[in-house]
Image (cartoon, rainbow, N blue to C red; front, side, top):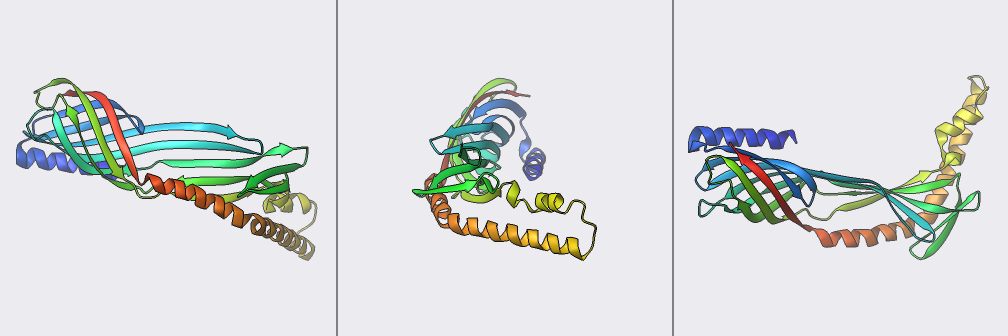
Length: 264
């Protein structure tokens, strides 16, 4: 974020000193990444430099089937730094630059409760059942490449004005590469090492007896965790591969924004 802003300031300073600065416009916009704002400096009759920011988020979005509940938090956020070339010194422009993509998708895959002490769910067409004290949920995360080259076109009706309001529209595409999906097992209270140690060693004075108890608890928990991971890992890996295959289809992402600005 700071690098984008610093780069914009330096470029605008250079333009003002060496090319002939012709005004600054600031605006608000609605884009595919959310609601945001932009600032643009006109540095010649047909060239401008623009920096923008968009953000949007959804928390606790739930999707549920017969055996499994999916709970997701989605944060869309991007910073953009581009050069706008106006070939006829008017509103129409061709753009090129980069998008810094800070978007992330976090979620929990939570088996639906079956009875008082058992959870059941399916992965890779196989059925699993565990105690609610052993396995609570599976945390998933999707990360995107931070830098995405961008090309596009659009209109900025304030560009050839000395000052005043204008309309902005941008349409383009960015190459973000393949997003990466990862997962982590989230264990229940029975396999929470710190909680087990606190509960089962309460009242035992420090010394060899307590140390031996702590060692035994750690061995029991780690052994059971490993058993669960070994049982579920292959099928869960296949689920993640299926998700990754879907993510691989979206290496190119569209970018659309529409807004208003004011040129000083």
